[in-house]
Image (cartoon, rainbow, N blue to C red; front, side, top):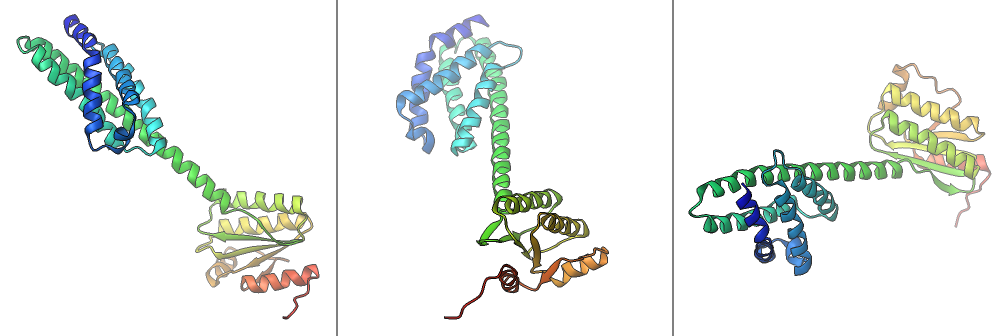
Length: 272
């Protein structure tokens, strides 16, 4: 319906001003904190996208804008509820304006409400998808950071390194452990590597085999691996899985592991 599209474009400035004022006055911290020109510019872009979608078979401009905005706002920590509230206020301003302007033209009002519903729904769906995608990216990045921190090899003294393991192990993390150990031994010329598994609640046969493989790889580089903090359950798992500890030295706790490492490297503990 050309007359309504033309009316929308003709009243764009009015709609932007009224919507900006309404959003600014609302209890929405992000929008209330925005300078008026910035808030108005953002609303103008939204209305211009709506104008492109009015009468279109499938809304595309407004959903695309909302998806891009959603990715930005989610990264900034803006609530999706506030985004949807601001969007709803803008559409309400237009609906109220057209209800008055086209009071004697119900077809125009119906046309607007029909397309308003389609456009707003598509925009809200795109916004939600963007927030979900952004949240997944954040969670993946956090998980990657946690995984990286949880496989760090710590230098204790020259020639002695410590790998404290905390939390549940899986095959991917076990592979990272092996890589971290080999990298540290190679670069730092470690002579003894202490693998502390006292913080690992459960180790199955597959993970136990990974740990033994990591220890064997360390030995191939000329360093001595020490496995400390093995619980009775883990020891039983290794026995039940038929794993051969071979020359791997195991000690009850980290203190004993450190003392043994000091002995192997020739350090002497003095008393004060």
